[in-house]
Structure formats: structure tokens, C-alpha cells
Length: 125
Image 1 (cartoon, helix red, strand yellow):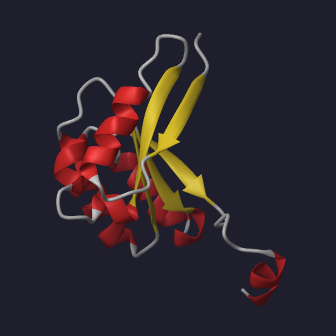
Image 2 (cartoon, rainbow, N blue to C red):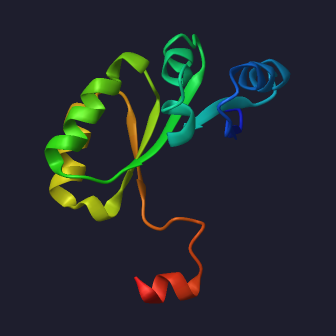
């Protein structure tokens, strides 16, 4: 099995993302592409992701809301045929189970702590 990596497409610049994808083509490892909240909410970000073919797509939204809002969001994203989606563990077990139930073939990744938080932030929380 080939090693896998994800490349973060952390920009709203579509030509830059196209360049990232083009320059990262290889047969040596399996590459996936991560698209975050900023990209997915940009003017053409969602449309761009919806048109990707034969790519591993990781949508990093870190969903954290009520059960109904999270379910509606996952259902609204189904047309993207994404492979992975992030949700906050702190949204609760009921929300996590409900999201998993409607996610189909999309793998759900639980986020416990943001990497931007330091020890002081975590103690305050």
C-alpha cells in the first residue's frame, strides 16, 4: 500500500489551488487535498471542489453545532463526494452518532483540540 499524505489548500485563490494539484501529481504516494472553512466559503471554492474528479478530498470544516444543524450541513455537502469531513468531538455523542449515520461513505474525523491553542488557552477553556 502506498503512503498517503494530505496537502492543505489553504488559500481562496483557485489558480493557486490548481497549481498545487498539478505540481503534486505523483505515482509514488497517494495524495489527498484538504480544503478548509475559508476555501469552502469563498466565492467559487465549493464549486471547485464539486468538480474535482478522481481526487481524495478532505473537507476540514470542524463542524460544531446542534444535531439538526450538523445533519443538515452534512446532507448539504453530499454532492461534493468528499472522502473525509471533520467535526468537533465537543458537539456531543448524539451529534457525532447522527452525523455518522447520514455521512454515507464519507469518513468522519473527530477534532478534539485546535492546534492553535496553547497550554494557557486550554487552561482558560
